[in-house]
Image (cartoon, rainbow, N blue to C red; front, side, top):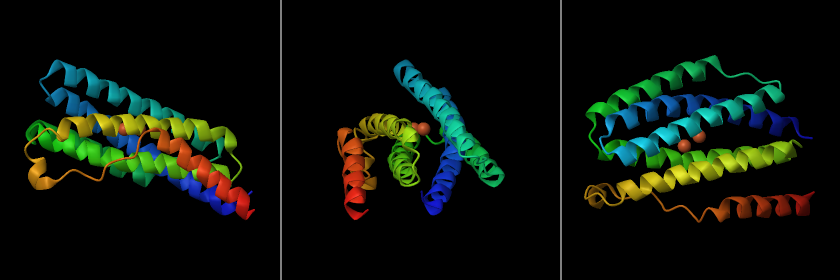
Length: 183
Ligand SMILES: [Fe+2]
Ligand SMILES: [Fe+2]
């Protein structure tokens, strides 16, 4: 079991734990700022999923004997509230586009966490982490579908396309195989 991988996993989970706090508050501001009832419901559902992720990540951290980082909690509390406030003045497009870009990064964060979990022998955490990566994939897809239809993307350009959802688990399995071959 690698102590380095365990430390990386704890650090990754601390980042994710606080990022979910920021996301939760940001989406609360976001759904309250949109007028379309379908969009309100969908983003509200996404907010609930982010709080659920935070609970799950908090549980994994505790299992590892780790604790949330007070500094990150502080920073992301403010980021979340800042974005929530921005949603009320930033128009329709910018929050949709910004959310999609951030969600793109969240997929990778949980994929990396799953790799670190495997490296330090916490195989029981892998499915939970990959499932969260898949939910972030759904979030990214939703905001992509919203932002990509808007005329502003001709100037701003869409962020790089994600691979199909199945690629998350396929990539992880591939990585595991490579790890076995090295060991
Ligand atoms: Fe999340
Ligand atoms: Fe998300």
